Structures are given as structure tokens and as C-alpha cells.
Image 1 (spheres, rainbow, N blue to C red):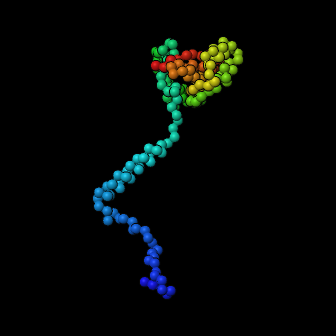
Image 2 (cartoon, rainbow, N blue to C red):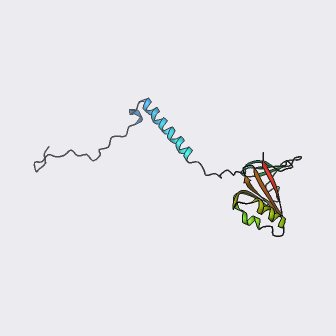
Length: 174
């Protein structure tokens, strides 16, 4: 074909795309292969998009004091089990509606200076808490509370506080 100037006209198309294949044009093996790819893609997307969760605390698990009373840490509760007695799960019911459990890290300087009227407890805390911070579980129950500081992989220091009076106790992993 030539145009008015005698030049050859170029073939022109508004749409150079290939037509989209339909299921009718595909054979069953192509359909299965496409479905397999889609299934694999779905699994990969689901596994990579998990919901954010609270990181596991190194305190999770079972601990005991020298008298063999147990303390169990879970993500949402602390369970106290005396040697001879029923286990008590710390929560709003056991704490007159005032219960809080926090996991994290704590600067030791704040804790070491908390018991000014108890120099023996201050001395114990300064002797045992030699690093600037520790993994902790902080439990508030009614008017008192306990801060559990993980000293190392097998030892926890429990610091009790109730109405301005404190005490401490060591726990071991079981």
C-alpha cells in the first residue's frame, strides 16, 4: 500500500497486545499448573504476613524458691504454686481488681534507690544487680507488687514491695 506521497504505509494497529487466554482455550494441565502457582503464592503471602506478637520473654517458664514454692510465667499471667496448696493465677480476681503484668527491661538504678528506709535491702540489691539493666516481669497486685529480675539464664531475683516495705528472694529455673 502506498499513501498520497507515494510512500509505503506502515502497518498500524491500535492494540498490539495478545488476547488474554480464557479457560476454554487452556487444557486441564495448564489450569492445574496455574492453580498450583496460585496456591503456593497464597501460602507464601500468608506466612510472610503474620500478625505482630509480643516477643517471648526469657522469664517464661517455671521457677522455684529455696522452699520449692513455684512461680510460673506465661505471656498473660503469673501462677504461684505453694509446695502444699492450690495454685493461684494472678489476675484481677485475685488482686481486688487491680492487676498489671508487664514484661520488658528495667534500669537497676531506679530499683536500687527505691527502698531508702531499708539499707539492708539496698545493700543486697546493689550487690546482686551489677549490670545497668535486666529482663523483668513486673507484677502489680492490689496495693503491692513484685519485680522479677532475670540475673542469668537460671536465676531470678524477686523484689517484693507492699506499702513502701520491700523484700527479696532468689528463684531458680526448674
